[in-house]
Amino acid sequence: MTTRVLTSEQVEGLVEPAGLLASLDQAHRWLAAGLAVQPAPHALRAPDDRTADGPAVVPMTSFAPELGLFAIKVLADRPRNRAAGLPAQRSTISVYSAETGECVGLLDGRAVTRLRTAAVTALATRALARPGAGTVALLGAGALAREHALALAQVLDLDEVRVWSRSATRGAELADSLQAAGLPAVSTVDARAAVDGADVVCTLTPAEAPILRAGWLSPGTHVNAVGSPPRPEFSEVPPEVFARAAVTVVDARAVALTDSGNVRNAIAAGALREADLVELGEVLVGHAPGRTDASGVTVFNSVGIGLQDLAAADHVLRRAAQAEAGTMVRTRA
Image 1 (cartoon, rainbow, N blue to C red):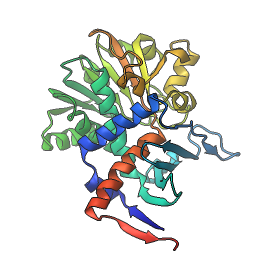
Image 2: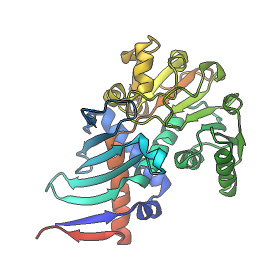
Image 3: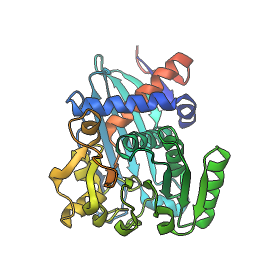
């Protein structure tokens, strides 16, 4: 048995944006049609540390019979790493043949997670933003924010990308970087000013308390709530935003109810009902309405699911095989 091993740097070079978007679109359609298996993850927490930022290990599993593959992503979520200048999340994705059970791929999860997260946001934005949307507000200025700007440029004709960060320096640096990449980016030190009049708003921070206010949103705005880690204690978006939304779309209903602080807090506050949640795949296949008029506020709450990792990993592994990229490791005869 041989396994193809890919680093994050190799993944970066192999991803083709349009192909990745198509793979994720198909995966969500399979999920809506009952042709994929996506269980809710169960986070492993230390018995003696149940604090909001305590370390957690999250096994994310998925099975796509249409691909003949299943996958397990092991995500180590350690928010306290930031204080030591280390990544808050690390992950590894292992991909297996459903027919033989052999491990066909082992990928470092850093690039896969960032790229598939931004691509799914672009997919949701294409389905939910009002026609002609061109002004985007990014609340957050990390690597995920940059990836979102690039991904949204694939599905929107961008007029302006507004960047806000708690660090004005980082916000300005990201805006400069996006300008160098050919995007019409500007930075602002005022989050409300960034959101005012924006067609699309993306929250992209690991904030424990909300950074967005419902009153800032203009009629017709589409909100992508993306940054919160998969733990109920963190929430970037307050219940009032969900109360205002005409529709709330999630990656997968069971996962959102388990891991999303945004969704759980909104339900607890009476601003959202569990029955109101719509899965992205249901919108894509026409089983549920998305945007119904130009003035309604729409929300896509993204936690990230294992099926997205599997679809992205399959995309990368196919391209790696064509390019003969990665390291082939023989594990048994």
